[in-house]
Image 1 (cartoon, rainbow, N blue to C red):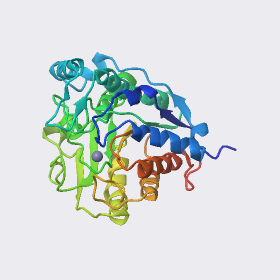
Image 2 (cartoon, rainbow, N blue to C red):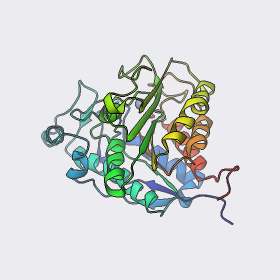
Image 3 (cartoon, protein in one colour):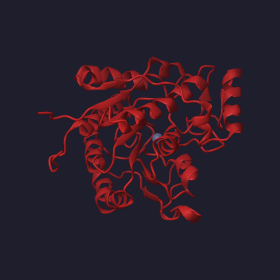
Image 4 (tube, rainbow, N blue to C red):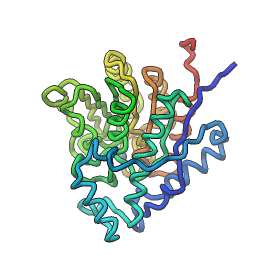
Length: 317
Ligand SMILES: [Zn+2]
């Protein structure tokens, strides 16, 4: 009798080679903390490890402009560091690492949709959800989850993909990339007002995409009860009626109460509860975004993975 679902994990030491300037919160130690904790807890041995392959330029071009790709490459090659107004860094290796981060999400999608695993988590960096079509931003070079969504549509013929973003920051990049597209539903819960400033409730999509964006701007100090209310009252019914072939989660863990950047009050158990509420709606691929308290990040990731791996008590399958 199988009690646990099979969970894929994308990880690679290459993700540590995107090296941050001193004191930057988005640092390689984040991934080291996750992997160390998963090994300590024993979860590591139950995961099916998916070695990532770099995304191709064509995969990136499904979401970003050639000018954006060229600019990122040039800054990386020059090795002089900054892509945004000061908070998005790049070193010579960063271009390849960023391709591997997007590629990791693609490989996880192949594994899940190819039924090699039930769901998958991508312990990748740099993160992606702030990266706009034509702009790096907020520690993000390429929008990993957006690239994954387009890949799933193009290579796996999925008519509808949903993206759930519970990072404490609004995923401006992901929203803008898909805001005119009714085939990709973007849902975000985030601290508001806060960086990057977008994500008001009235932002519901544009043109044909109107009604396919759903934002939950939440005040600083919001805790689990309000998050779970949003899930049960709106997010779960919305996802069920949209009926996506794949659910991508922009899994930032910076809404944890101990996060140094976020101001929310979630606990590691909150991430398990949110995961439980959506994990049976469609196959899940989640990708790391933020999360800057190393211990909280590791515990939240483990909690999220454990929830993904548990069979739902109310479903027979
Ligand atoms: Zn964040």
